[in-house]
Image (cartoon, rainbow, N blue to C red; front, top):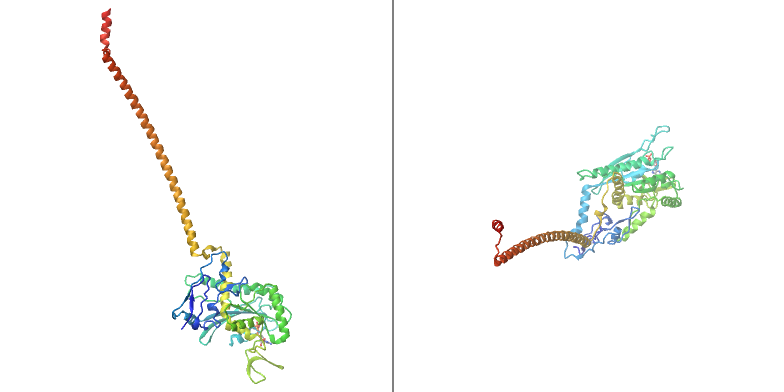
Length: 470
Ligand SMILES: Nc1nc2c(ncn2[C@@H]2O[C@H](COP(=O)(O)OP(=O)(O)OP(=O)(O)O)[C@@H](O)[C@H]2O)c(=O)[nH]1
């Protein structure tokens, strides 16, 4: 079936193999989550990468060996892997948490109901004039299990009623940041458990931020909120109730919003672009990017269009604005990005970048540190050479030590031998002296005998002679 090739990993976590005929788009419509290499830009969002070349992301580390390319003689079967992933994912189901933030009445509930084509939100009781609205921003979440073509999605929508509704909105962002961090903490706590098989992912994967359709520029509350949140959540700004503005006003407003966002260094979620993607996907992504911030219109009711169709939209005396018509608003593009093409990307970016950064900071603050060198990528040959050099240095050190000990022992032995030699020499001289003395005595004796003198003059005879003489 497959006339493909396989490659070993090039050590950078990327493979360049194709799926051949067995390629499946089921797990990911554009297949990108399965075969594209990725690099994370300093901004945290993936950027275009050259497959196989992103080893220089590890500057300073030793380059890994080139992968061996081998032709397959017959179909092995791993081209079916995407289908296996697809089946497993369908079995497990998906979890997605979306947060909606914006001032009251901007159409948040309506848009969520429109997005998922379900009455997730029931009409709320709007507080009567003078009725207590509460003092702080509330965090409320609604969950629902929705199913489409056998794929189950546990959708949680986190609402933030009260945001921007007070006289003083200085700290409106705080309860929201706290809630996002509490969700990260809950996930971290699960990860630290002994049994991590069933992790419930309640982290916020996307935050749709509703901008009031003023036509001016971003308000201080918008900037403050986005500045505080952009490192913790995928921000998706939308212009609420876009049907209240003309097309020209929308174009101008978008430009102002984008320049404000750039000016304040705010990172919003941008669909990443990867190399080797097909033309269609690239164009789709470009179209989505061109619509940011999405000018949306929400409606979960059907109205009659002038040409007699029943459409989701809003009816006005001057005509009908259709939610699902790309010429009328950007709702379709927002839904495409959020649900159809980039939901997995949003989940992945939340896990791999936003949560990872939070987790690292948190653990560091707790005093947990790690030895970075253990993750350094090394070339096995270089490592072997390094180990050999270390071993040789150790051997040389041992040899030098042994030599020193040997020399010391030799010196000691030599000193001992010298001492015993001197002792022997002394004894030898003593013996020689004694013998010499003995020899002289014997010589003396001999001379006496020969001369007829008594060997040893007797005391008595001498006395006698002396006596006789008298
Ligand atoms: N013109 C217009 N009106 C909208 C749009 N979306 C919602 N509305 C209307 O605006 C009103 C408020 O909508 P909601 O969806 O309840 O707004 P919300 O932001 O959830 O409000 P809170 O629940 O108070 O935070 C309702 O009357 C909606 O019918 C829209 O796109 N355009």
